[in-house]
Image (cartoon, rainbow, N blue to C red; front, side, top):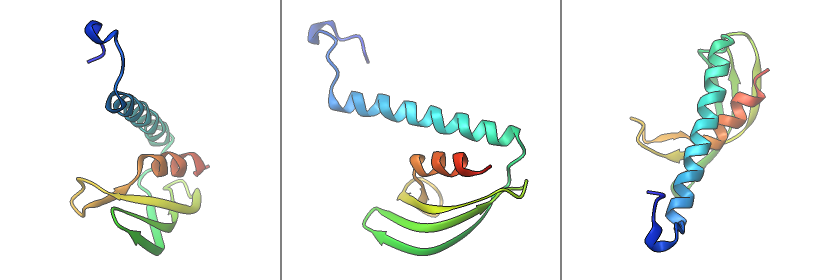
Length: 101
């Protein structure tokens, strides 16, 4: 909660992290919605050179959109609530969607 008069409305590190996460999520959602409106979905992926390091992994990914647009780049995967336990990081999703032209 941001109304904390007893603390002079000071923000904790956790609060800053939650605010930053909310902005990241909003930006990724906006990029997703833009690409969906432009007919880019579904995407197909070719994933190679997976390198896992603890709770994250990187891989070289080539994504191809329904429009034929492609983007190739290294992306980061993190452990998450997805059924497989792995999902693209929010930053990687934003980078990938921005690269599809």
